[in-house]
Length: 183
Image (cartoon, rainbow, N blue to C red; front, top):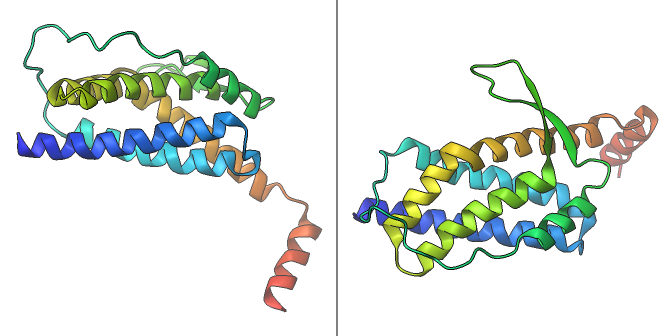
């Protein structure tokens, strides 16, 4: 149980940091740092998810999930993210890269909000002292939903950063390199 407790504690911290980062980005307060902050946040929460995927299946002590109360309204967060990502929100993804070549539509704002919903659900169990239930939920939802959505978001965010950095005008890049080398 101590090993599971350590994984749950770490997952809770990572979930909280991710939720804070996404909330900050959705507020629109720092649009210039939104993409790098989310690139880091999604990468970090995927590390927590990979840890959950690597351990044995967590089995809850109760047959039915204890009621954690009504889920919080994520729509304001989703709407804020959609405004931040206006013009960049939608992307194309594979339904399942292992079993299908079928394409599907994705949305950064929807995916990030859905990841937050799953993490919040587990966080509420964790904060109410239901550590095994929280760990089970985080593990199950990572494997069934948020892990895939986070991986897709990471790919899109990395592609956006690559376009921003690599699609720059060659003259401007050369001038910046010259200035950096000759202070």
